[in-house]
Length: 206
Length: 206
Image (spheres, helix red, strand yellow):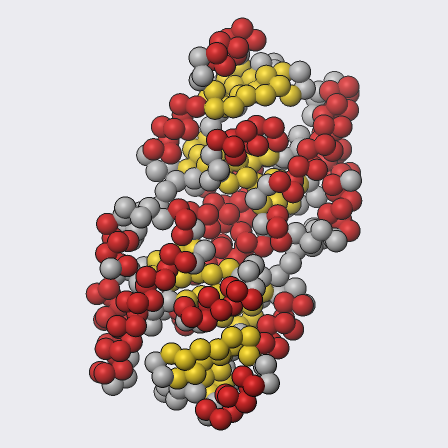
């Protein structure tokens, strides 16, 4: 291993509900030791199988508002009438150590993060088609009005894809995971991320 | 396979002599069918084993100057008192077909290409250290004054690394090849390269 120093990165994954971002994040985390997951906070109720502190920090509205007031959230937003937010501390701690952080957040959240971290890498995951997206959403055990609402929202979110740095089509899961892993690798090789204070880099260029 | 259309890319590899760019290009071409090598023209004499039309088009000075006059070169420059240039036709032909083109050229050439193709991807390959670079250059059977000249030139070229999009350290060959392949994959996933005229992309965002 060479010791040219490189800065860490913040990888943001957004996708319409049902495009597969949760599974993609899990697969990426399993394969890359340099990647840590930023757990979001939300006031929405847990779905079956979701664990507090792993999938989300599930908070009541009062606790969520308190976090906003204390400045503990990097960004927050209201989506489908529920609060969602990103804890600030974990991200700062991990990136300080030189680790990369991944988070799965919605379009509003991603744009907020970009304003605060211009170097954040924004990846939008597209479903292979609207038909496929409908089929995946219907497969979840949510009430039909929730599915309909989420589908309508997904259409709106798709239009935001063009504001992201990268677009990955989740046609084949393994390919999508490989592509996002490549995006992270490539981004860490960007000249703009090389730490100019790295002793060996300075020596090499001397 | 999805049919969201993506534009091809032009991948430029530069490196100080001896950093391993020729081997890296060969390995990349062996592994990616979507990648074609742009053979440069030069007036320098072939090294042992180099084939005309494969490693370079070896031209005499008169023929080289004629190509310049006819506008057949995308860029050209004089390096180590020899002419080097990039034929225009091959690149246009391949990228029109949607294929990616790779070329190994020097710093002057890379900067010329960037002016003409702002979307070109510029990758600089760094040797793991100056000592390693010296060892590799000395291993070639060139005259010692050629080696010394090339080493002096390499030091100058290293300073240009910061003007490239990506910096890859050729510490371990397989890793360097994997990283450059990732850079190409990531670049083709950039939102800015999605062809907005692609029917399926428009449909997906409708």
